[in-house]
Length: 359
Image (cartoon, rainbow, N blue to C red; front, side, top):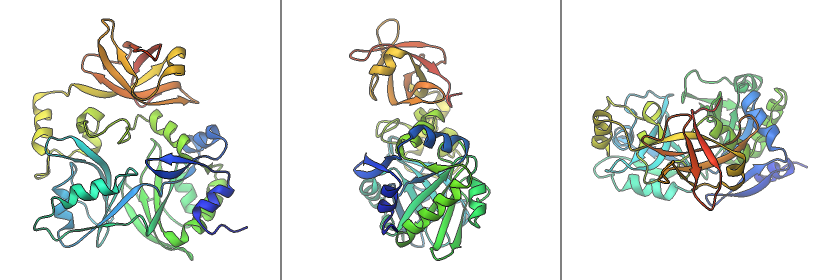
């Protein structure tokens, strides 16, 4: 029976739905290990339509957004993009964003549940600028191909993967309307996002699913994407970094910060951190022993030999490749790989600081 909506189609494929930031998200399709294998060894198809998406319009859109985020937007040409942090005057994070420069608008892609907060934050700084923010989520869905065979899958569909990270092209896909293809490897391998008109989402998912099947891939749910993300050492806003995080604490300097661009909100503090030294804590990987694997939850505190709290677990997963691992923060002096920390009760066991990405 044909699916009338993307939700219907995913349900027919065995999707088990659960809540992520107030959105109903496919958690798995019955075999998380196979879904994870597709994401890391062939190609997986993930529905990411629950993510926030704002369109920025107006003559001053580029200048305005460039003055709000940590990375260089003014230098982007249409068809290019970047990853950036949105911070406040104290340089504390309010979101992380993928910024895409289209011909007549900018697209901002970010974590679910933040459309209101990001809109409010940006609108509060529109003073004389000709810039307008529109929630694009109702108009487009986001289907994502992730894994080393992404480009091969696109080729079968008559599409190509744009050359550099965050580059994007608009391509007509037979009877689906205009589709935007964004080069975005979200989990440490190749990948692309496809923005598809909402009315065509179910049809597009069927076609993409056939494409990945030919490459030995499968549909992938939230649980598998989270495992792949943690293995790749990629922090998620709202979990591994939040409103109390400075971007350098989450290792975002290379990916998200331009030290040569003009003024933006929070720039002075970011520049000071670079000039005067390191931050007081940093994102690290942790390998968990058997006891901690059973008792760890996000927020579990870790102590050093003296009993002083020096670390926190944020994302905790059981990796098919690496066993029980986590991302988390470690205070300066406790961030070197090989350091052994102990869990504070009620959790029990030990965590060894590890390099990320996990090998």
